[in-house]
Length: 144
Image (cartoon, rainbow, N blue to C red; front, side, top):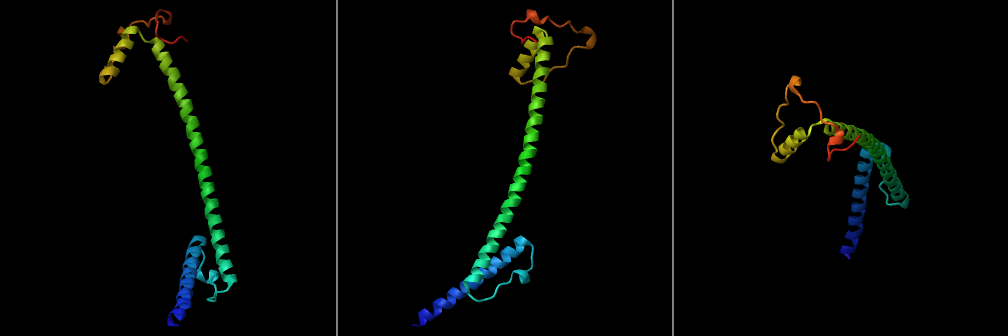
C-alpha cells in the first residue's frame, strides 16, 4: 500500500520538473522571463496543452529562423557559384589564347615543367622574343 502512495507523488514530482524545464527552455528560446510563462502547479490538462502550444510555437520560431538563414546562405552560395563560373570561363579563354600564341618550343617546355613539377623558368627578355607561330601551323592547338 505504501508503494502505491509513492508512485503518484513521484509522478507529480516528475511532471513538475518537466514543466519547470519546459518553462525554462521556452523562456530562453522566446527571450521572456519565467513570470510571463509561469503555469500553475496543478496537473490539469489545460496547463499541459499550454506547454505543448508553447513548445510548438518555439519550434516553429526556430524553424522559421533556420529556414531564413538557410535561404540567405543559398543565395550567397548561388552568387559565388555564378562568379566562379564566369571566372573559370574567362581563365579558359585566356588559356586558349595563350596556347594559340605560344610557340611549339614554349609549349613543350611548359609540358616538361608540368611533368617534373619544377617552377616555371623566367621568360626571355622582351627584345629577344621570337614572333609567335601561326595557329594554322600547329596541329594540336585549338583554333579560334
